Image 1 (cartoon, rainbow, N blue to C red):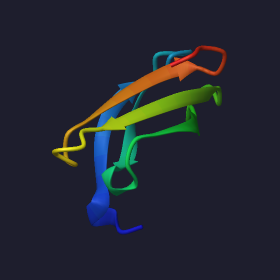
Image 2 (cartoon, one colour):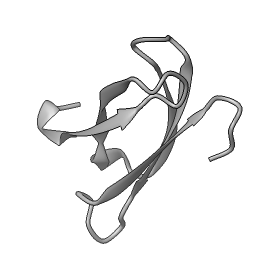
Image 3 (tube, rainbow, N blue to C red):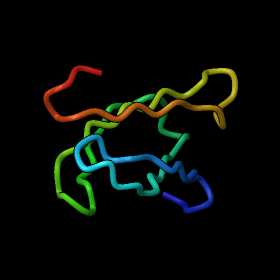
Image 4 (tube, one colour):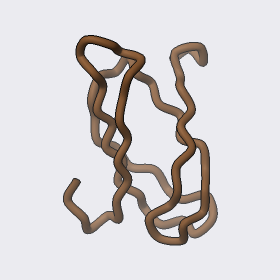
Length: 69
């Protein structure tokens, strides 16, 4: 993975509300992944939806590990 392919998005932990920068690789298409909060260490479910017509346009949804996104 090349850093120039990563886009940073400022998000908040759904557990402790701590802000952090999430790095998104838009070349990988839409995906669901997990990221641990850097403050409270809780597992965060991350859903990334890439616009098929414009790869640079994407949406990010965060949820607790027991939520369905």
